[in-house]
Image (cartoon, helix red, strand yellow):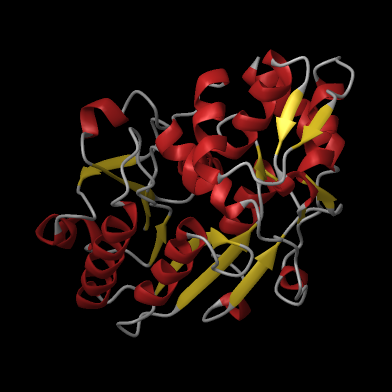
Length: 296
């Protein structure tokens, strides 16, 4: 039996469906099982639990072999306490997993040096998940190209709604995007790749580009000309996030930590982890077209 914490999120929901299709026994953790039932594959067992409530995790983790941790607390409404919630949730889950005798935790975090609150929190979460001795498989991915990815949605709506853009220096930052389907393939395959246990695994797509390049590619996928960009190097993350909040559905409270992380390169430096898996990377233009078609 495998448990997914964060199953009602975008990647968590795709993973639950994928594992169920593969014939795996899947248990999904949800604060509100009734609401979650409308979002999750009907073949999945749904149990009540909240990573911020340590006492709610013992029953949920009973009988679990591998537990996926796909939770992050980057909240809406300008909430700045997501780092502390991430710490609490990771500590609680790690303690409960150790007490339940879980064989392994699989976690999805972010590529790049932890130089922003968002990236720092994702990396600290990995450290805490491994702090109680339960073996950890730690995947680190760059921007995920998929219709439910907040980073992708930001790019897609900026392109869709603005004829030209005032852009800060982060549009020249290098990144190695990965298709949502490929992320799910790595996560699912981790159940069968014993060599991934206890490892940090960097994952990315075939192409390295910049965030400006992604804006242009997304425009073409929407049948538009690439939008003119007017560079403003001193545009702060705070102002950038409010600007994004005005012209996209992405909440400013989510946008700010995302924008702060865009100044950090997210490129795979060590390919040895990816080479353990038989995952054929989706071409970036194909991933972008699929995500645009699903979103709009």
